[in-house]
Amino acid sequence: MKLAAFFLLAALSANAQSDSLHLLVADGAKPVLISKQFKFTEGPAPDRKGNIYFTDQPNNSIWKYDTKGRLSLFSDKSGRANGLYVDKKGNILACADADNELWSFSPKGVHTVLMDNFEGKKLNGPNDLWVHPNGDIYFTDPYYQRNYWTRQKPEIDAMRVYRLPKGASAPVIVADDIVKPNGIVGTPDGKYLYVADIGGDKIYRYEISGDGKLANRILFTNKGGDGITLDERGNLYLCGNGVFIYNPQGQQIGHIDVPEKWTANACFGGRKRNILFLTASTAVYTVEMKVKGAE
Image (tube, rainbow, N blue to C red):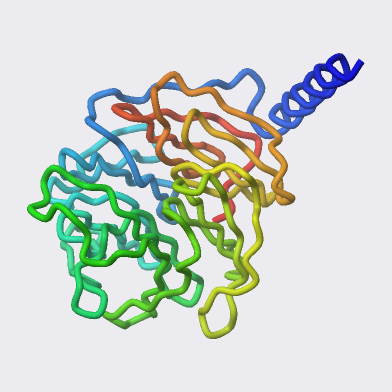
């Protein structure tokens, strides 16, 4: 009886997820392949018009996917950019992994270095970032050994979450209680920050206090992964083996299958902000949605 009850609950859960996914994904929509010409795609981020920028890190480039569905090369000297974020002025902020810095690209592609060290030491490798409404930058700093680095070990032992205050050049630690932070996203009101712990297989949610510090960490869900993003309803999208979708209470309500070995990251873009854009290994995909992105 216990085994039968288990399978019944599993079936009910699967049906509930299917029903919830139907409310999120456009009727009949599946991931549509846009291009498969890259080496490893990452860091998608929309601008205010809905154009999407993303990286091909091994090829040291940033690409643009515009609202008309056209692909174009934005920069072929990206600093080995990983995660991206487009600020209110249209600057593309980048986790420049070549020398473990944060860069800012003007809309014309000219870059400046925002930050290049922590207390005189080279960071592990800024991975993903999110900008608070007040302009502060929150970013994750895991360590992934790159074949283009000369160093073979980190200068900083801990893998942390940092904040770069607006206009500052020195980051401050805001979280050192995560095994290996990766994806990061905050709520549009600037009250909460989600961090994916790919090393601890968890997602945590923090409150952002008025002074920019993080407090009151809670376990959001017992599953970690790569990039994360939010929709307008507060649902969280976790990338990895496809895309897992969680409601604001941390319960899984759906999964989008992606025909690639790994889906690294996602964002919402397009004119109506209802196009889920996926960076998945050597490819990029889009999925038409019934919901819009949070930002």
